[in-house]
Length: 565
Image (cartoon, rainbow, N blue to C red; front, side):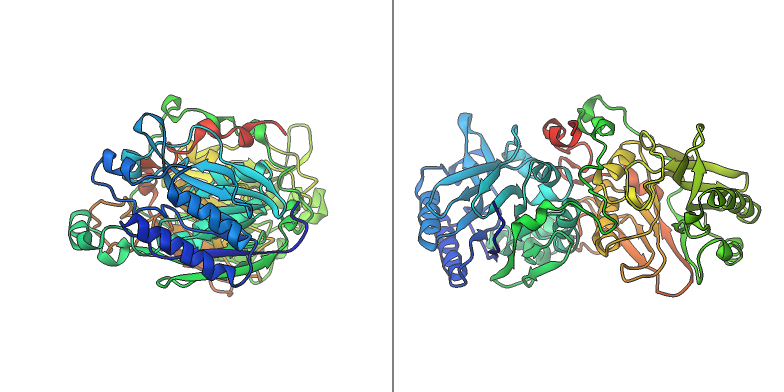
């Protein structure tokens, strides 16, 4: 299914405390969407009532039943407008429990699938029950649709599992004030999984309007950020945003696409990024965090790091690089991948790599320098490795883990390791490992504080959203170096020191940002770009009340990630 072009719609609007009025809003917006004849309409999360409750009894009372008037009206409207409709609500469950659930209705009014929210944020943990079963992937005449909700998409696992189970179109219903949902977390899930994403957020107050001033005072959150952030959007498998709504107004956005385009998982170099996954290495992602040893975070509060872009590349660029390294003063300098050797030269590249290590060691002083080079295994095979060089020579190497067509000659490593440095624990990965969300997650479980990536991007999303999102969802500082190209330039992402929602922020006014790091972007010119990063900030991964970015991953539902092909 999904071989024909469809029109999808994402609808954003306000939802208040009056359930009857909220139903009217849903029906009105569905009618508005129907004027453009979409085959799929996605509505926001918690369409029945604000996600604000007096107590558990109140939460249960304002939640819905599948056979109640509210959802029956939605089913009837889906039939009337002849479209698949996705809606997020709270549902009454057995034993007075409540779930946050995404529901899919067919053009005949049939309920085709339910996905309970897997990752709860903040006070949702006090009122809602997280999912105990995987979310729905429904095979329909317009394509295979997967459902998830808001915080499920701030970390990678839920949409990843839906995509691995065959979803071509991911439908994300949101209830978010966070601007980095729209700029980072929503769009990255499309190219990361080579699928389409249709995401609908709220606008207007997310708490009772009469209580906004009091809630603002009690939570240290300005009134502005007690409103939905909008930016509902539709994203293509290459990361292109096909349509995006504004931040404030009720709006319905549309895009036409062919869901079967998501069946291709091939990068521009011909690598199939699903076949090249290494699920046998991902087992720790599916283990109970309570039974995993915690990490000890060391290193300074802050450190100066740099990326280095070169006027030329290959072995001829070595002198240029050495001059910049000797004068940098940074604790860590990251260069683009394979930028100092002629990698296509086979055995010559190995000799050049050895020369590069020796030359950098003689010039770097107290700095550590990262790039990628060609090394050999004990059995003499060539291996593409991210390397860390200090004054004593090669101090750490991380070989490529995932197969790629452009480096098909590289022997693969059997996992990731990390390096304890004076500025904290450093994780390295070569460019073609960075497109797999599992790579950064595995390093985060090792307590990595700084992710260094000698990058050779093949697509713009890698720098626009991919690596920044890896840093954000795992709370790691990022230093990614790339030669300037149409795909972007080098990027440094420093962790925000003020982080946890509902905490008292010291250095900046609350701006709603959930996880996006502070970005220092290199220009297209050759030379060093420097910035301060904050290694010790990697220790705090609690984004909100009872919401830890690693420990609250839905580890018990990750069989699609960890199971063998």
